[in-house]
Image 1 (cartoon, rainbow, N blue to C red):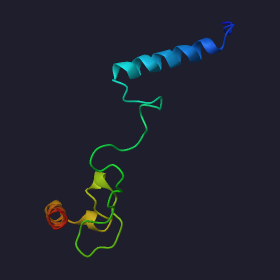
Image 2 (image 1 turned 135 degrees about the vertical axis):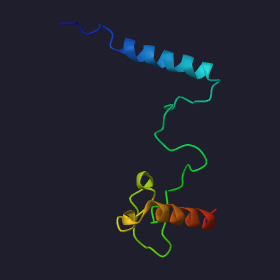
Image 3 (image 1 turned 30 degrees about the vertical axis):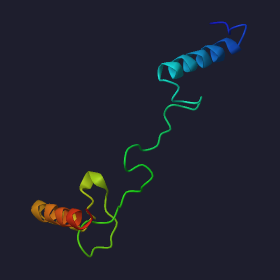
Length: 94
């Protein structure tokens, strides 16, 4: 069984030193905060996805981007009609 270190602050001081070295290499872009915030990045940062169904006049919630933003009722439509509905929605909201 491994013995615990005599000085428990050795590990935390090593981590702090490593974080400062990484921050120095990055040009000081961080101020001691965690690098990954777990938030979305890019132009859509801060915006919520529009989860409504892409078929005109449908008020149902879609199943999300994995299913092309179609609700359960409109997932039964042929693929060409689903794509036409997505294209019409995209043209209207562009």
